[in-house]
Length: 312
Image (cartoon, rainbow, N blue to C red; front, side, top):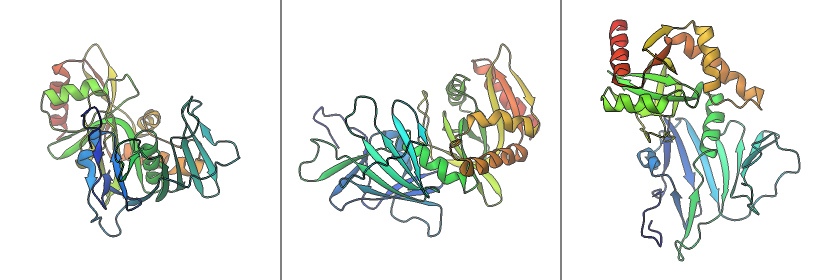
């Protein structure tokens, strides 16, 4: 949809459609007169039609543009202090985005604790479609990643702070905290055409048909790499900058302990955090995990290729 500036802003979801991220259908329904828009164009490859696989993994999101709920009186379970808060009430969570200076929340989401069903209250976009309600879906950080984190917690999966690539049909993750070099190494891999990039920032890993599968996500980093592709997970590398290229294997227990800070975990909810921690430990015991100290140049990719070839 074009704004008054004449620039295309975001993407419109097709009627009856939704999103498919990590092999999970996010089915979105709204008032029949509404047009749904996602502001980030990186979501375009993740659009899905109305033909979701029956019985497949699914998050149902019902959008409301009016009838805002009354906020709960009890203290927040989690509060960022400057933007969003999460309240827990019975078997449901309430999340609201209310940045400093806003007189009212920009959106409020009510979700079951397993995130399978969501009621999303959004404010209609202003001055864009006088004859039809246009709703900007807040499917950006933090909401989409919070939904996915809670959904995966009880369904054998994790959201990793990692870059990902598919080489010869196998997926490899390059995990690290902010500043570890994920975007730098992603650009090196892309420039070398080493394989199909999944993401330079966030990758989903799920247990699928007895194995582990890595999925790209729309949550890109500074390199803006986002693909809906997926492949069986074959290895994990924990990135660090180094003066020379070096790959050293890690024991599964030590690898899992180092991976945990790079995984989205709801520490405020032990019942949801525990299965994610268990899944991280299983993943690190199922595929090789290495520390990869790399130099920020093309020699790092050549060094990685040599390592993978030696292990094949």
